[in-house]
Length: 613
Image (cartoon, rainbow, N blue to C red; front, side, top):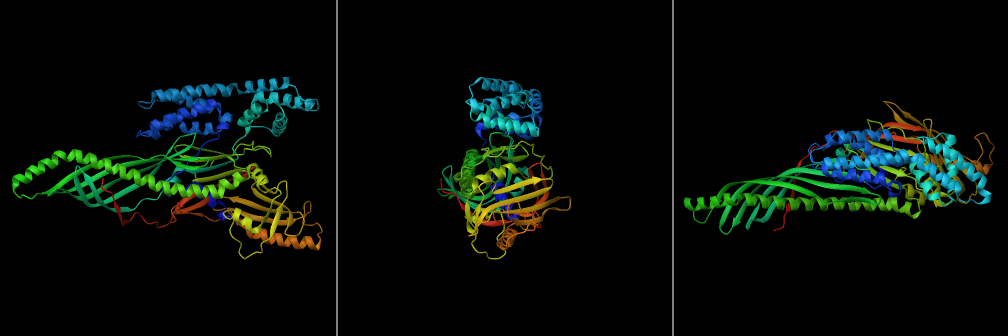
């Protein structure tokens, strides 16, 4: 299972090479007033992007807290939203008072809507009760609505088991009613929490950014009508800034550096020896969308300064050289401005080209290995990405309700972790039902689908085939510190014999040990126990299945660090720091540890010839 997270890590981290990722929420899950809050926050974040004290203002305005509440939709905590509103009424960044007031106004409207939600839902239920219902459904239908009405009036943040049953039964009845779309949408917005999270801390984003090496460049361009040639040295450092956003995950890749050069400018028979220094800062906004990664054009600021060292003229008399020298100094500001503009253009082109190459490769892998297989099965989940100043988060929401929705609250994120994977068993089981229910797949087909999830077998195996059960073909359970995997097959090769394969892991998560240890791996006919008598045919199939699945599901999971190599060279490892299974949630957290003795930035030679303008 060490490889079980390679795809997740690649999706989350490889894009910071040197790009970062972001995403877009499902519009159907976001109420209009919440959308207005998100849009107001976007405008304020954009305005603060160029502010030197942007992080300070984001902290004072509680924008990270607002982003997290926007992700919850109608389940947002009104009290926490009021704290953000109070901060918006108290703090005003210089020149941004109007934008902060617009955010406060949108917040007031959304808070009012959330506080009226129980009354609005109750009114919808009363309207539904007045609509004609088929006679055969009338008694049970009205019984469910009457049970739902007091539940809605209280509008609890969490539901008891009895309340969950009432809600789910009501949703089934509502599907046959003309008010079903309105009620089901509102109820899902209120109670359907995310089925999974991937969280990446800013510290990890920064750690995996490759730092460009010092680069030798050749200069060959025209400035102020003079041909400028020479040698230069480019030094640059990359950093990542996260921008609060509930609409998409937003990362700005920032490149700061300078170019030092020794040049000779020639115009006719006059030559001027100079040295120059160009300082620059480039900002490249990056977004993660449901369809992949996107980037906006790089914006570059640059400033050049030059120092003429000597002048060479055909006439060597002092008067001629002084005249030329005065002309050089008079034109120097204009030459510096033109040099800075050319540098901005070259750096922007270079950054856009390099990032585009990275995005093309990452998007192609994401589409072919993850999105397209799910799309073909009609099982593409709802994805919502968001960002705060400290982390990037990708939410996964189930979009169909073949099984009951997730209703329990996710556990808190470990503060010491740099990468957190959180998934609910219902989300996994829903998609396993859609993808594998009743399907017949060979070993080769399974390896093609699961190649990134499990290590290859230790020895070559025959190309066996499994036909999954129509209901619950693959089922996971995350309860009481245990991870349980159940695989139900009705046919194995030519043997039409239903079997249930159960793999049980005990999770350990202490300061010195984070590991899942296999406690059980058994294959049995449905309903049988290990003490049940089996036929010779069943015993042979049992041994065969236990051997096959024993190679796929090893004796330990999550026990090995995951190498991080976004550019092909390992920069460090992700070491597991937390592993929990409780109330249907599986949480795995890692801490990034830089590679020991990692080489610092070194000087190499590389030629970059700027085309003559």
